Every structure is written in structure tokens, then in C-alpha cells.
Picture 1 (cartoon, rainbow, N blue to C red):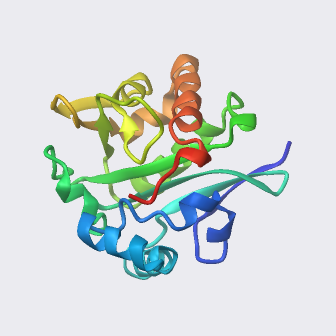
Picture 2 (cartoon, rainbow, N blue to C red; picture 1 turned 135 degrees about the vertical axis):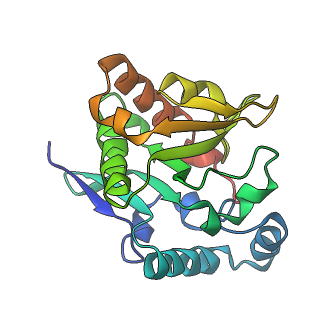
Length: 205
């Protein structure tokens, strides 16, 4: 099985699941995002966001290919590029951290270690760029796939709560710990990336 992790660019954006290509939940603030969806311009807004982040900051995601078939992706960026983050009661993300926005692995490819490889690749990228951690907003009341990752799953893969909240705690994963994960954490990570966002349930806002 040949697998590659390729930086996300405008060229391979079409390889993301259909609903993810035009999802601007994190990329725009709530009001602007809703307006983009109503106007039918969310896909263009997504392209514009990725283009701007690539030009100003650099790589903001990875696409995973198995035998040249796209099977998953992860998206991340400094909080300054994630307007939706300010809408959360536990913001802001720490200045030494990058925000994990969303991640996904196709169900048929879960349990093969792809989640571990994907996040370790992100960790190495961010360590090289001088960051110490990944932070994410978790949904403590998660019931169904949505754009906010379930807090329980984040905790299961090694994140620690840095700001508690009954609905949206902020969690943190120290990057260097990802380079020596144990098998049980690797399996939990695969579950996180596979279960959280099944394509049919993804929504723009």
C-alpha cells in the first residue's frame, strides 16, 4: 500500500470530500460565513482563504493519498487566520499554538495508522516552524458529526484541557509528545479522525 501526505494547495483542494471543499465554518466569522453560504460563494471563499494563508503563512493542511486515492485530510492554522475561533467562549488559542480546525479519514481506511502518520507529519511541520502545541475547541456535548471535534475524542488522543467549559472546552496537545505515541493513542486517533466527520453530515455553518 503506497501512501503519501501532500501539502494542501489550491491544486488538490478538489480532492477533499465534496462538502468540505465549500465549508467555511472556521475560515469566516459567523455572519460573513452565513452570507457566503446564502450567496452561494462559500467555495470561492474557501479557495481565497487557502490562497491567502499559503501566501502569508505557508502550508495549512495535508491531504492523505493511498495508492493515489485521496482518503483523508487535516486542516490547521494560527488562530489569527481562523475568525470563527473568536466566537468560542474559551478563546483565544495560546500564542505558541496552532489551531487544529478539522480532520477526516474515509471509513474504509481507518485503523491503518493513517491518523498517526498524518498528525505526526503536522507535528514535525509545526515544530520546524517554531510552534510548541496544537490546540482545538472541543464539543463537550457532541451528539452527531459537526465542524467542532468532540472533546472526549480529543482527550482520548492525548489532548489536555487548558480552559474548561461545559460546552466548548479548549484543549491542547504538546507537539513533541506526538512523536512517541503509544499504540492505544494511535488507535484512538484513527477513531477520532474517522468518526468525527463523515462526509454526509458535514455542513457549511
